[in-house]
Length: 158
Image: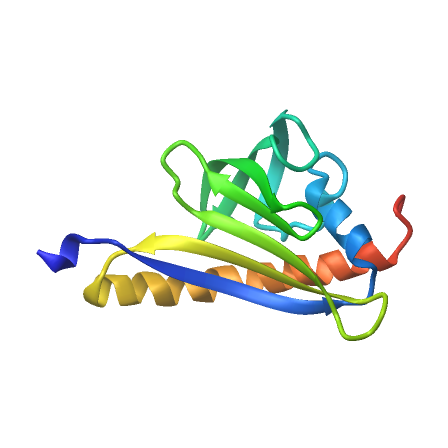
């Protein structure tokens, strides 16, 4: 029966960041000092279980959505080091979040896209899941991108 088969849904947001791609990527890939400074308020208590910078890192964090808090674990890979960073959910979560950093038209700027691919049901329940996940996740990514722009254009220490 087709209604029980999951399908995939992608939620994303992009922004132009007025900073060098190398600086932006290094902030994203550094799960000890950089990444925690850009996450939206719904993500808290980031713990690095293994590694800490780029591929091979394993993280754990709290995600609060609609008054519900859940613990998420993810493994980090770098399919294109310096350009693409991927967080793949562990412990039953099959969500895959990708951070893509591309050079922009103006020298010294970059274009950053954060996207998450989620499993959703088909039919009307899937439509509800897609609508709700987009409504909840896209503003979180817009906040993360605004934070990233602020941190990337400021001093590393500030």
